Image (cartoon, rainbow, N blue to C red):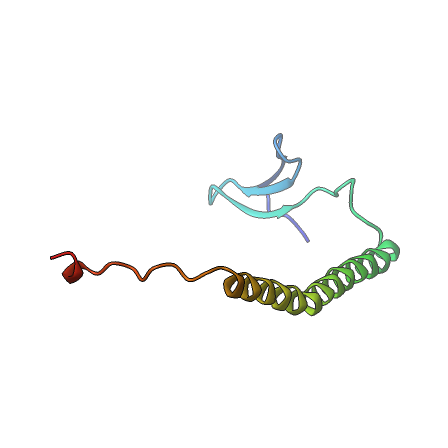
Length: 101
């Protein structure tokens, strides 16, 4: 793109981006981000997505297994509490306020 005489190109000292500033307007008219050094290759992108999918699937399967055994654990706890309640003798009935008069 052809630049006007009033436009100057400046490198940002903070982020390294290239800015094109129009001196007449006193504004940035365009910018270009610097190339990232840690940018993954497109070839590696498919591998990264496949690994993420496998990780999500493993977590999901783990939660499914936990839910399957959760009902059994709760029913066992309930049966144990029921047995304890049957074995313990019933105490005296609780006192009511009007019984104290």
